[in-house]
Length: 322
Ligand SMILES: Cc1ncc(C[n+]2csc(CCOP(=O)(O)OP(=O)(O)O)c2C)c(N)n1
Image 1 (cartoon, protein in one colour):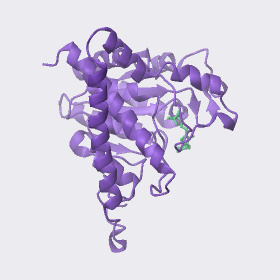
Image 2 (tube, rainbow, N blue to C red):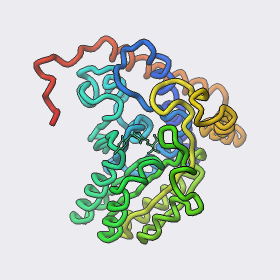
Image 3 (tube, rainbow, N blue to C red):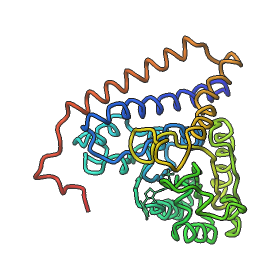
């Protein structure tokens, strides 16, 4: 049984580790050794960590193009991820898939795909199978506010509601789809979490930069789904700090201002959780430093291993592809 103090520490450490992994990869990206388009989650770690902590190992998750945080939060192999970004045979998709195809079935990470919305249907399929088997397992689909504009989203909500399948839809609303703001794409007078209720799917909107709020909401949602009540929809309000794809900052692209980005950086989910733990005496500055060092060692090892590992051999390039 995990105490609430231990749980809070775990949530913070998980976010710190994910941030350090991504910042390390972002700093190495310019070396041109990772030849894969890479969508960083820096700034939006809390939904991944809060939701995955509420799940069991045998629950399954599906993600999209921005999948690093989900993969790591659910327990995906770090070596498998870094190896994949370097295109090596030790990668989780044997170097064939790149950053947008992370998976690790042992940890319940079934698939990630850059085709917007596509894995929602797969998650609903898994959840339907679980309910037909009378299993207590459940499925989660992570996606962004842009993906709710895909037709498949509506099909999935409808089907999941009709069949009452145990699926949790997690929308990470970071206010942008590539370079287009939500307010010019969707009628914002009706919020996303309110619109899904027209399918009778219950929903909640939560501060997606508050990992404890996300965890609490996810726990309630998971209980709802697991108890045979059908799907649930969680909208987490958050923000992507770096460019849509790639490691850089993008104030100069003209679609958002530095002031706006800075405002969200001031709401950093990791800083907020750190402040909360420090102020309540649940950790010390020395411990924070130690956790960072431990994560750094693990990451340095994964990067060194990925760099020194072999590429797939040409003769086997079609193995595992279909
Ligand atoms: C079916 C489909 N249509 C369009 C695209 C191009 N595309 C890739 S990412 C993206 C924006 C996605 O925005 P969102 O779902 O909000 O996720 P975020 O990038 O903000 O995490 C688009 C339109 C795609 N990959 N697949």
